[in-house]
Length: 495
Image (cartoon, rainbow, N blue to C red; front, side, top):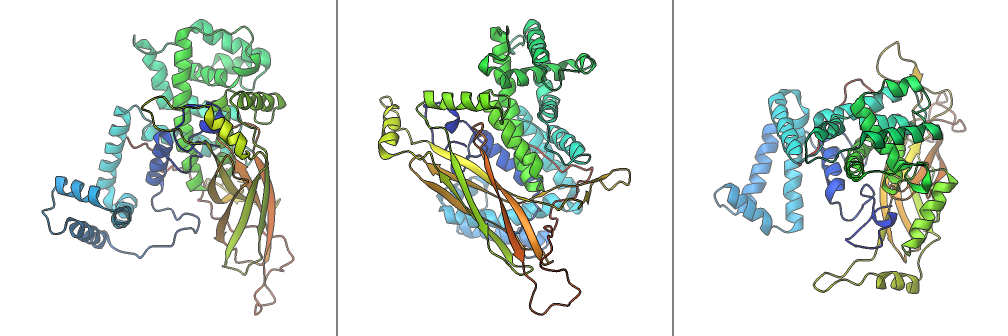
């Protein structure tokens, strides 16, 4: 779940996630969205966007400049005049101008003949991001390559240790550890780090059971990894005997904040690449980091989550997912219609009572009612025995990967009984039965995710050759996942 609107209380997970924020993308969530736009500007969005007319860069520039000149009304084309004209535009006019410019930007950022322009753009973005204390391109390359390496060897869910180790070893967080040498930077006490490590070893947490692995861990990575695990295990008195000093508490807060920023970026990138396992692993880790809990499937974590929400006057979410898809012909659009029933919907009295708890101070704007935010993700299920060769190297074994065929952010006010929407994508060419797992995911609440399998048939056209595949066979969705190549596209933040 995520938040929509500004609100000081309650401070529960209902209002803490940024990734599922569907109505007010500010802060890190906005940064993540900008990053996704930079990553793969030429990537078609799963059939949801129509292919644009092919134009040369010169033609695109001419069109954009003409639209800009029209907006200026014949005035001289100066920076101040452009800024003033844009401020005076209606939202529709701004959208039209942005559309004219987006095609030109896409052309310049993806064509090899504009290599110099791309280098200048990337250099500027990285410089602005670094000055603002944000991740830069090399952080994105690190994240993408680490996740890609795992996916090239396994189709299993990405382990928590792999995700956390990837984040802990980014240059972005390593710089944070190096900054401890400065007087004004939060310092994680060595005694605290040793105590955290001892407690995790005692709990037999993955990554802390092999003494040799623990000893050979790079110091800066060890520091970040211990702080992230400390965040996960701080609830429920799991870290027995660990009492953090003030400097460690401050270092922990900064480390977690930056880790969440990296996860937001990686989430948007995974969506664009159709990496469904990575996408699901990220939403799970986001919720755990937000709430300081260690396992999405652990009953104790669920109980702690429910108790925390109840202490803030909130109900623990209970969902029921309904989903269906009609049969289609090859090449038609598959439409999975879903409805998420909120069994925990608030009555008028309950919602009013919750709102009354937050009386704004004099001079402050009235607080908005909390809104739940969720991600609905469609995962195409491959047949057992089907394979997808990744990496382009003969030495690599065949690995089966499901693909992400669609996603949809949904939200609901406290009183709303349901959330509904659609996931659409192009039907495969081969007749047969196809299956999609529909996930409802929260990036801000632990133990509330749900899913449902949906099946549909691609029917044989009436006039089809007898040699075509039987419509009674179980088929698999056409692979639209970008090939898992060793080269990782640009992943940067925009300041």
